[in-house]
Amino acid sequence: MRNPLGWLERLLLYGPERSYRGTPEHLDMDYEDVFLETSDSIRIHSWLIRGPEKLVFLIFHGNGGNISVRLDQYRDLNNRLGASVLAVDYRGYGQSDGTPSEDGLYEDARTSLEYVNRELPDSKIVVFGRSLGSAVASNLAQNNPQIDALILEAGLSSIQQVMFEYSPWTKYSPVRFILRANYPTLEHVKNIRCPVLILHGTADSTVSHGNSKRIFAAANEPKQLELIEGGDHDFLDQVNPEKYYESITSFLQSYVQHDVSLKQISES
Image (cartoon, rainbow, N blue to C red; front, side):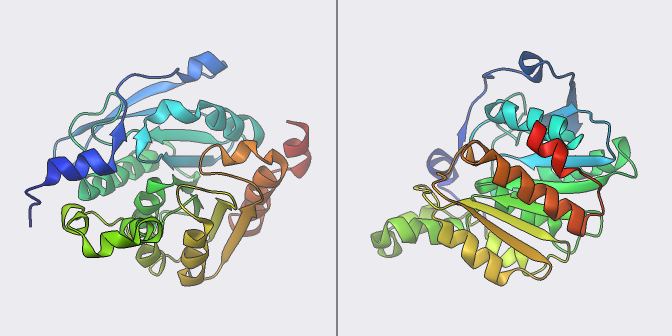
């Protein structure tokens, strides 16, 4: 059923930015602008940064900003792991057309995965979702044999759970009728068969690390949970880069059969 207060839901839930804070070129990365059309005729934009390895990270960002917010992480994944990166802007973000919605973001993810399979054949595909993107990534990974691994960072178990956790009074308020979107990462992971790595900061003041603990408990094996001491919601990889990237590296070595050297990580 269509939400008659959809405009208000979008105002409360999404924080898209149209202008970029930079491009990969600012960090000396070669990249390609990729424009794709979804099944519901929305044109979405992504950046493709190619790497030498047969490994690609398909990255879905959080509810605010756009793909330019984490340029440094794209560089690190490309330099440290030799991975290609496809950073996706949802509809309504950056240069992507349309307006954001839960079903719309899921469709954007499906369209992006189809492109990765066409453009980077025979690559190991790691789907990476941060914050709200954890729900987008986990929805895509449900019962999907095309995906080799899933990484969730600062994930939310659901919008409703986060809302009730920080503002218990909303359980009895009209807000829960305005926010029809739920983004239930916890429910999605129950249907995921690929290996799952979950990363979260212990000092996250936006989405508590209790969310990731709940997601981890619901996920199927093989799974791994790494808590970064003192990490807040954003820029988790900059709090303890060694632990962060060693966690990703060991995870890939264990479950994706991808040869990434720990020595390469420590010297980057």
